[in-house]
Image (tube, rainbow, N blue to C red; front, top):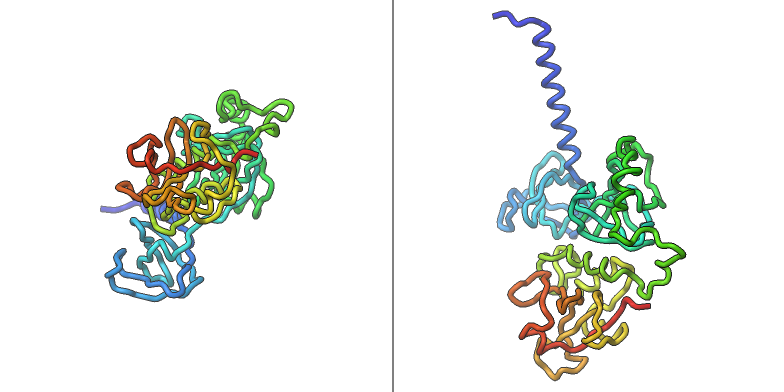
Length: 336
């Protein structure tokens, strides 16, 4: 059977287009990782007992193509293997820095006003921008965690590279939304549009308490790791320190030292964002016996890096049979 030249040409073009699309999709999903350990094993399978193919020195760059649990599937000099996530930095590089201009602005799971709110940022908070899609910015809400903010409420202050170098360029269709969807809803909680007469500056708090609580909740489920202070694993004081650092407030490293700072707060006057301390070792109930800390979130509950059955970031009640007997004190680091 004869095949026309036109048909062969059409088939060839189709194959080339499919390959080009596949390549571009693959390239878009790849990230660069940098080895952080002194000498790190490059294994055949994502298992500590798997064969070691190579040993890579600190600072070596690899291409990350996939992940599985605590492991990254990587490529180095055309060799494919697996490396543990504890020894590889695959954080993205921001394309710009911005300042939040709305009073309290929602950060959403997707670039639509109907998607879930996963965090809130207060006016004048600095944000790192990693992507632009239409009238939305993809911003960091913590280590390896991202969300979307309406560009109407973020002022870009530092740009890195030309617009052509950025992940997704602005488009006219997205900018047209400014007069409609985003601005009418504001993508800001009701009643918190741009304040008149500098209302935001009159706040008695350094940061928005509810925004801090919502940010802490984005870390629910992260595993408990003794000595941990990153989203790969937290201990109790490392968790609260990480959350407060995100809002520009520095805390001491241990819960005992954290209990010595801030302003004392009566249990009956707790506000969201206050730190609550406990003596979980059942000692003498003195300041030096404090061994646990969490963040009060309202309604008699607190969020913390649980060391009991949960072994992860979880929410508990202050009135529970366990914590009510071990409550020690509270401190306010947020009030001016």
